[in-house]
Amino acid sequence: MAASTRRPVIIIAGVGNGTGTGGWTAREFIKHGYKVGLIARDEGNLRSLADELKSLGGEAEHFAVSAYDYDQIRVAVEYFKQQFAQDEIRAALWNVTQGTRKPFLEMTRSDIQAVTEADIIAGFAFAQEIIKIFKTLEPNEYGKRGFLAFTSATGARRGAPNCTVTATGKFAVRGLSQSLAKEFKFDDIHVSHAIVDAMILTEMWRKHYGDEWYAEKTKDETSRVHPASIARAYVYLAQQDRSAWTWELDLRPSHESWTW
Ligand SMILES: *[C@@H]1O[C@H](CO)[C@@H](O)[C@H](O)[C@H]1NC(C)=O
Ligand SMILES: *[C@@H]1O[C@H](CO)[C@@H](O)[C@H](O)[C@H]1NC(C)=O
Ligand SMILES: *[C@@H]1O[C@H](CO)[C@@H](O)[C@H](O)[C@H]1NC(C)=O
Image (cartoon, rainbow, N blue to C red; front, side, top):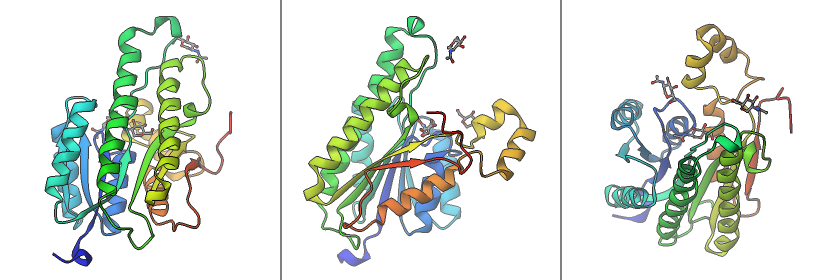
């Protein structure tokens, strides 16, 4: 098959049930001609998101993991390599978060282990497998072999009470992403770290605060981030040419309080 007929693919790890950043990134990249590979923990959620994407005219494959860990992430990426052998995996998003909020002295060994395994070690495995794939490709129309993004939060730059474990994971991922951006720049591999400094409007918050609150927030785009807007920022990053690459992106709604 000629290289020009190959379609770009984005692999998204951390899709949840498709109502948040991972799911919207899939919807947005499909609009831009990408096929998608989805990784999450619930097979049923993955299947319904994949079906929805197919109904939008997209092509989607999915892989369920029982946990975000080193071995399962490697198997998942290998699976997509086979599934998309006729296409080109050109973009990848690590959107896994394993946070726990509580006082430090109540944190347990399993709390710190969970963050270490999911955010750091599985994120490391994902980046390694994805970069190996990118290195086999020629630069695309934007002059890059591939684009790898990490979704992150304010906690990547600023610790806070009750956030010891969450911030530790986020600081680590920020360090990983910056080191990768530097190590692979001459391979034309673009790595970004996106700090989302606000509430992301998802079903989780609708459950928490109720339908009325959700309807208000849906109307008032100045006070929350819509995951589709984050997804559009990822499309923009993926399309940046080599004369201006963003490593760190910082997103907040227009009226955010800037509490840090
Ligand atoms: C995706 O990233 C967002 C923002 O950090 C986070 O709230 C969400 O929990 C992540 N999804 C998963 C499945 O970890
Ligand atoms: C930390 O968590 C405890 C227990 O949930 C809570 O009482 C306290 O207000 C929290 N501290 C901050 C600064 O949020
Ligand atoms: C999606 O997942 C979130 C976070 O786990 C949950 O709060 C929400 O209720 C789920 N929404 C649906 C429609 O299943």
